[in-house]
Image (cartoon, rainbow, N blue to C red; front, side, top):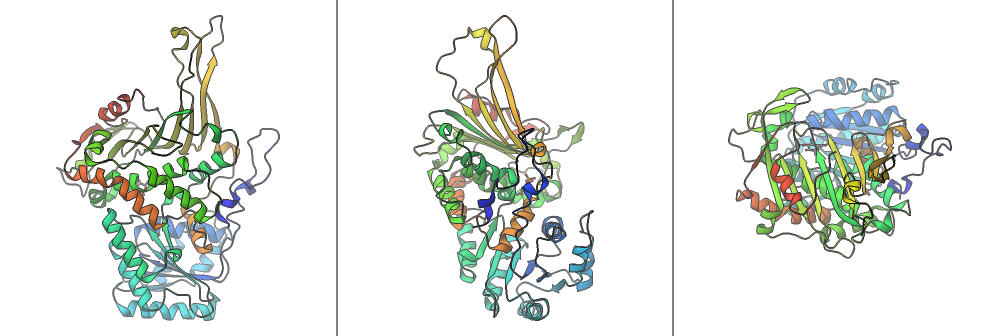
Length: 521
Ligand code: BG6
């Protein structure tokens, strides 16, 4: 398979620095070209299309990653013409554009209509047939659902009703790309899947979790399985505990209304955190192809101990930000944000203690925290190693010695840091922690592609490795279900934290109860 098989397969490492690489190091994957195809974006006039999907597509086009036999139809309820849609798309050309995007945009089409209306799909089918005849799209289709989630099932059903769930004559594939959220709990996720599966087979469905498109999330696999020095210590014999942090300094921005129905548990923990966790803790896959990796991820998720509601209450902290100061600016509290109820109980912060009940991780606490309006943006995973069995230094001499820690910084300042003890120069044998730091940006100065570019290209190329299989979605919901239930019952009580800090004091107590401390990102 393409996808992850090429992780780390770039150009030469510079012998002088050991870390510097050339720009072509990041290009082999993006040099892959999908087959001829027509892409249909449902929700084409919406925020996601405008902010993420179309700009990513424009980058791919400018980079020459798409075949000439590529065509695009936008479908949405906004009453736009082809030309109005094209005008919006033209504005999304990358600053360094060589004109390729605009040339392609001239051929884009737009269908204004209701998603439940047969006429919408009739018109769409006609346009797609026309593309096959005129633009050589060869009967291949990729449908991208970027509408509100409540419409996913209906759009998939209408596509099937009009025969669009199969490739057109001469084509090889018809795929459906689906955005999160995949349901709002286990039951609704299963309902959604049932309606998608009535229209498309599982192997046609590509569920996006944009964290999987981030280079540094994929780098977890390279770190673990392209090296021999980490894997032997990646287990309960050496690891004291694991910390996963997904910290955002942003608040809910203009999404208050949506966030009220989501909260941090559904918005981040059920998906992004579970994905990062499963890649970090899973067993080595038998192959780097889609099922090889996804089988191991789901096995890991199945090993996460599902707490009962009482355990959930004792092992979870939920918090909500209050007004505060962030990067020198006063920011409002969550309840003062647009679209948010002044008495909202929605959590903007979650910390939890999990256990993975398998041979490798039994008894190793996994601490997770995520929140909005925290002091900084930082997503990272840290393996905190056990202390040496015996320290031959008198207490005072080792007081600045922290446990050895390997930190995978997913964003920003992507990289890997190893902190360990070193002797402080001087006559006394004092030791303290120091860090060895690998920076992605320094090693690969060409930069990395945006997550959406990678995922769009993979979906168009048929590589499902980085997409979420339905059993993964269900298992992640199973894990958070008792916590959701506890939250619904108002437990644990909502803790408050000041915007610009590192979350509620209750979260410190949670980890300190186990004799540990949160790391400073
Ligand atoms: C999205 C959430 O899935 O991820 C947002 O809905 C969140 O609330 C975003 O801000 C974080 O993504 P990133 O890539 O900025 O870490």
